[in-house]
Length: 452
Image (cartoon, rainbow, N blue to C red; front, side, top):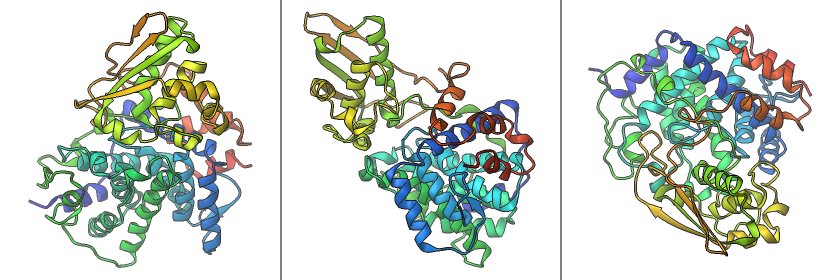
């Protein structure tokens, strides 16, 4: 039987998958949401830094649009900027213990524009990248975040290489080299959460995935067992070495994790580890008309891995606040919303918000959510008032925006229009084209629809 790396390559080089209506909806949502948050993040400082870095490199290639605008760059450089921008606000979708769309969509849009590929081809390539990521991350019993690896940055590189190799139609031998090369380009540390480097992880993964394919097509080789070798990708990343490196028992084409696991669309531009607590705080505040000035203490119980990611306990900037449960609770109580307007430095430093943050007490539980192992089985928030009243959210197991509690009709469009409102693009036209992505014969039309 062929080894795992070879099996992945055969899947990547194999026939394009047939996409059910359910899978089409999921993938379309990934493209819509990512383009929206990408445009919202275009003006963030980290996007400017990476954009300047790309401009200084002066690549002679002009294959793809940067941020869907008039500026052009090589496909890998456009993917680098666009994926960084899409992750800059931490508002992009979630799945597979990371952020699949934030690396796959910018890479595929840039490559698709260079190749003048149709929308359906991009969606099929997205599915291949998603399935490869899902297969690899499911093989470990332990949580990569706990060891310090950011799954978006490490599994995302291999997923992008698989998706781009599929889009280009690489034969299995070249795809196998691309996968192996991508494994050596994987990196990204949890320690950098709450800094500009965290969104750069996404940009780097998108760009390095394309690099891996470019290098394979140029003749670079990699180990034929780079993924499953005892000193290979899976073993090196594994927190405790309890990782399955054996060949797949069933062909990857028979597995449809896109349909069963899907994507969670974020309602808040915060680290996903905060979302269930935010849901609980907002529900309690609205249901009981809680006066934030009369809150004595808030007790929040979250998972161990969540706590390790939410490292900023005294944030002073919007960037730091994205990884602070204290801020998430304080914002929810202070203004009963946690949106883009609240993730501004001035709001974070408001006296009432800072005072509420100091009232938050965090405890951890060492349980694991079966479909999102970075989370505990459930979160919980208890608000105690100065008159002795206590309000308890109870166990919160599902996140709004996920498969069990999907966005309400119109919420995705509302989020997209909010994200693109200040970008200068025609949001309605762009949204319409993205919602018909599988019918586009050339995805370069997306850039034309958003010319600004």
